Every structure is written in C-alpha cells, then in structure tokens.
Image 1 (cartoon, rainbow over the protein chains, first blue to last red):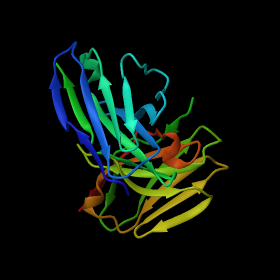
Image 2: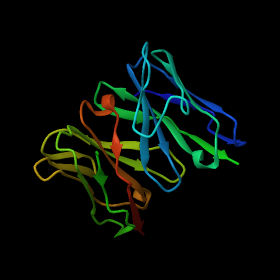
Image 3: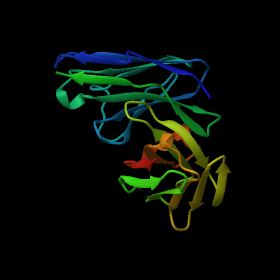
Image 4: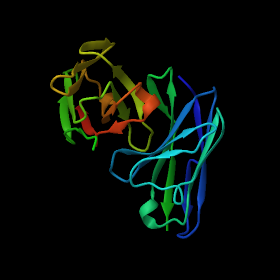
Length: 113
Length: 113
C-alpha cells in the first residue's frame, strides 16, 4: 500500500482565515481524493484531484471554498477558505492503489474558533 | 443519491465470539465494497475489499456480498478487545478507490473482555 503523509496533523484557526493542507504520497498515483469527517460523522467525499486537470467536486462542495491543487502525481493540496466553526472537521487525503483500494493519510484535525 | 446504511450500534460482543456487522447500499450499479476500521482519533484503515458475490476470508475476517439483496457484511471471528472500533462500510460505483467512496455512518463495535 502507498504511504501517505498529510500536513499539518492538526491546527486551530481563526474564523475568516484559510488553511492549506498538504498530501504527499511515496509513489505516483493517478487519482487523489479529499474527504471530510465532521465530528461524530462518517466520511464525505469533497473532490477528486487528477494531475493536469481541474478537480471534480461533489455536490455541496465548491471550488471557491475548497480550492485544490494537483501539481504532480505524488502531491496535492486542499485549502479550506474563509473558515467558519462549521468547517471544524478532520480532513483526509486518500489515494487509489491498483485501481482497487483506497488508502488514507493520517488526517488533519481542524478546529475553527 | 447514493446511500450506504449501517446500524450505528453500539454492538457489544463478548471476547472470543463472532461479531457480525451489516451494511446495505442503494445504488444497484455499485461494483466495489470495502470495510474500514477506524479507531477514535485515527484515520480509517482498510480491513477487507470484496467485488463479487459470495464470501471472502482473510484471517479472522470474512466479508460477504449479496448484490441481489444489495447487502454487505463483515464477520469477525474470535473477537479481541483490540477489535473494538468503528467499522465503516464503503461502496464505489467503479474500480474501488479510483472512483471515490461513499461511506456509511459506521457501526461502533465493543468487544467485552
């Protein structure tokens, strides 16, 4: 399985500010995904990030709020913009392996105050 | 609207017994099915994947899939206290992690020593 590193592991941010989360993979992957896990809830897919194209967002998520970059096959960033307390969640990066299975990074625990 | 349903629990099972976790999904076109284990404060860890009807065994874990009934289950034999966690059922329309996953809310499993 791929080794996925996310930074930061946690952060406390002021409302109205933005945070960029980084996801680094130890091997080249075509597809990278960003999920959100709100407190006590399950995971919800935010967007799919392909290298060389615009990210594809799921219903309820927009690029202005969650801009994503995918500059190469091993790296992606997710920015949470103009944060409010409702954005307090765990944000998780995942990658596919052999087009069959998805593995997750350790997550970024975000608290907005 | 893709939906994955799980009983949230908690499901309490004595140590050494079989734990049975169930999941139903709404999209009949789903092709790939996964069970993840998530400890509190940690990211999901892939336990089992299954793609065709029937049973798939891996150590103490057995995944069962019935596409006609749109039903997936996970059996954990010889349950150990370390199996206490939230178990997430996840479903994909296509090649597993390559298409993003829809998660259930998870079942909280407690193994009683």
